[in-house]
Length: 231
Ligand SMILES: Nc1ncnc2c1ncn2[C@@H]1O[C@H](COP(=O)(O)OP(=O)(O)OP(=O)(O)O)[C@@H](O)[C@H]1O
Ligand SMILES: [Mg+2]
Image (cartoon, rainbow, N blue to C red; front, side, top):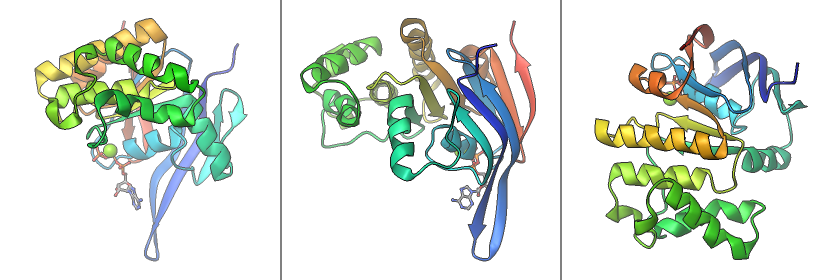
């Protein structure tokens, strides 16, 4: 069998707070194949964001092994880890995190500074991505001139700037009403269809999980306690 894109074995994460150690992940085993769409659900404080940050090489596990495309990335020097991160992952957060002083298209171009897209092709790539999220008519606006749902679509385009293998999203629809939420779900579907991007999405909303992913993983007290697969 071909190796999984993502392979976590016995991943733990312990934070130190004052003198106390706070165990947050308690032995997570998880494999995700290239092109899969996975939802992660679980109570507040169960460790979802911590797990997503480790998956995206934003944070290191305390113990356990993380293999990404066959390479052990559990404990790499910062520089190497950030190279792998920039090449492999795009991130979408609940609160958009766009830069106010830049236009929409400049926001989308920004991550390309750390990628492989030649400078003369960056604008074109950014415009294509804005077209993918159906914001071609807004490229020279500033984030403050956009609705929440539109800002999140910009954030998705920005996350795709370097054509990452994996899109990681932490409550991407958490700040949006139901109409904006359905548009975001359509965009995720379109991104999957056109770019084949693997998607791992944390959500507390069962409707989002069901719409987005065939596979939903439930996490409780820092452990995967179950998994359901839609037909
Ligand atoms: N840097 C840190 N230092 C200490 N404890 C932390 C740190 N980051 C997270 N924690 C703790 O780890 C636990 C899990 O946090 P995490 O953010 O992963 O939860 P979550 O499942 O994403 O919750 P939510 O649904 O509220 O976003 C929490 O109890 C939190 O207080
Ligand atoms: Mg969280």
